Amino acid sequence: MTSQSTAGRANQKLRTRNAIVQAAAELSRTGREVTMPEVAKAALVSEATAYRYFPDLVSLLREAIADQLPTPAEALAPVAGSDDPVERIATATEFLLRHVLARQGVVRAMIAATVTRPAEAGARPGLRFGLIDHALSPLAETLGAANPAALAQLKNDLAVVVSAEAFFSLTDLCGMDPQEAITSIVHTATTLTRAALTG
Image 1: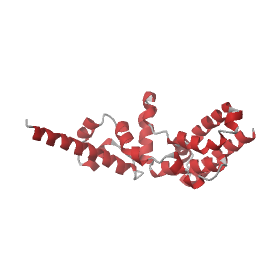
Image 2 (image 1 turned 90 degrees about the vertical axis):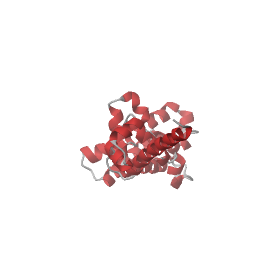
Image 3 (image 1 turned 120 degrees about the vertical axis):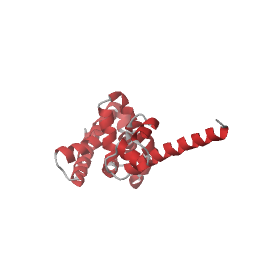
Image 4 (image 1 turned 180 degrees about the horizontal axis):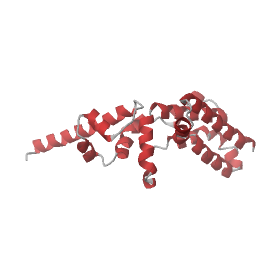
């Protein structure tokens, strides 16, 4: 085999891999269900080919969505000038939940693939944690200095509420409209934050 044919084969593999990643990225933006057969179809490859490049859907989705996630500072730009943790948590919560709603197919796929394999939970992006930390950053010098345990507890409490899982519980199990669910979770997150500040 010549070096030219070896290079051509390597280039073809790279093009195939990139096509699979691009197809997964595009599907993730639709909000529809994302599966390996759907990704393979969109990439114009067989499902077996997709699995040759990515052993499971989680590893593919992790790479496909890596460039789609904003930084916490970008997400909280509307309240960048505010030191009010309640306002900042409201903005962070609404941002996360609207992100989940717009990309719920990929979010559900990531949760489904990792909930049965807790050791792989680190494959999930964990966007909420950065948002919560950034939203509560004005408390570092106040509550964080006076009672670090209370600030840590607030962050843990918010991580339960400011989440795709909470959103899906309200929409799927309680039958709430997505906007109602967002409003309810923002209310809960801001109530928790206010309580921590006055407690």
